[in-house]
Structure formats: structure tokens, C-alpha cells
Length: 224
Image (cartoon, rainbow, N blue to C red; front, side, top):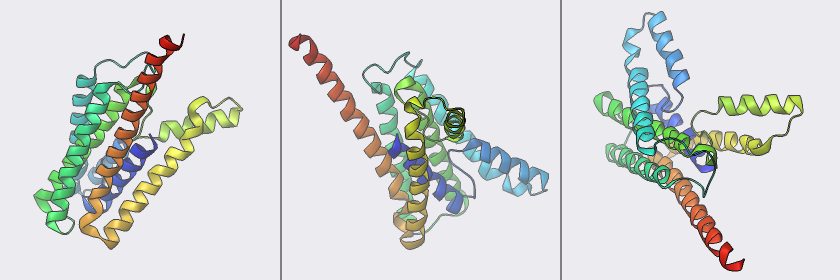
């Protein structure tokens, strides 16, 4: 979850700085930007937030339909279909990275809109995959709710349960955004390569944990 949060921060940083000053994974922010564009008579600025919204909705819907109803319990970890969606996300982000590198600079015009749309689809798919994993996973693209719950429980003196990871995930999101921004500034053609690497690392870590749990469960009856 920490690696996926870092990937989300990296994608949003690149989307905001180079793909139209919108977010690929924070749709509440895009809705606010859309409202600002309309309320300020800057109707030419509505295209980017609309593209991001459409891509995110499409990615979330596709992932939710593929993953099916969320499991009731953590079971053996992330379901196979969740891992498959993350693998598809890696492919989408890798294609974006190749297109970005071939262009040699942040794109403009139609190519920029395409890259933004693909990034938003990838972030929507990641969010849908996490929902499909049920209680075995947590949100990785929108963390305002997680922050609110963490602060509220801390202020009330309630036990945090899994909430102790919230500050780590928030820090990872900020670190991913910072790393992507630094790459964009110092090595622009390679900046978009960071998100697919982070998602791949997160998916592989989850797959390894799933295999280890499976081996433990298989060995338990033999030991008994």
C-alpha cells in the first residue's frame, strides 16, 4: 500500500505539472478546478479536468466490474483479480512512460490529453482494484478520508488498529510526488518511468505475501 500511494503521488505530480494542471487520481480536486474554470469564465480550461474525470470513472468501473464484489474478509491477501488489474495498470503507465520519453519533453495538445486520459484510467483502475480487494487493502489514491479517520481517532483516544500505517502512506504519497517533480525538473524524459516501477513493486510485494500465506496455510494441516 505504501508503494501504491507513492505511485499515486508521482502520477498526480506529473499530471498537475505537465498534463494540464489537473490531477489523475484526486477527483474532488478536479471537480473544484472544473467549477473554478466555469465560474471564472475560463471555459477553455474545462477540457483537462473533464478528461481526467472521464478516464478515472472508466478505469474504476472497468476494475470494479472485473474484480466483482469485495471479499468480506482479508482471506489470503489481495485476490488474483486485484493483482491482475494492477498488472494492467503497470502496462498503461509504462506505455505512458514510453510515449513521454519518445517525445523528449512534456507533451502539448492532443498527445498531452491522451497521456492525461491514460494516467486517469490507470489511477481509476488502481482505486477499483483496492476496493475489489476488500478489507485486505486500503485506498491508495484518495487519502483524505484516511487522514480524517486517523486524526479523529487519535483525538478521541481510540485505538488506531491499522491506522498506524496512515502517516506512512501519506508520507509515501508526498515522497512520490516530490521524486516525480525532481525527475521532471532534472531528467524530464525519464520522469514518467517512476510510477509504473512503483506500482510493479507494490504488486509484486503483494503477490509474494499472498504466496507466503498460501504456503503457511498449506503447511498448517501437515504440522497438526
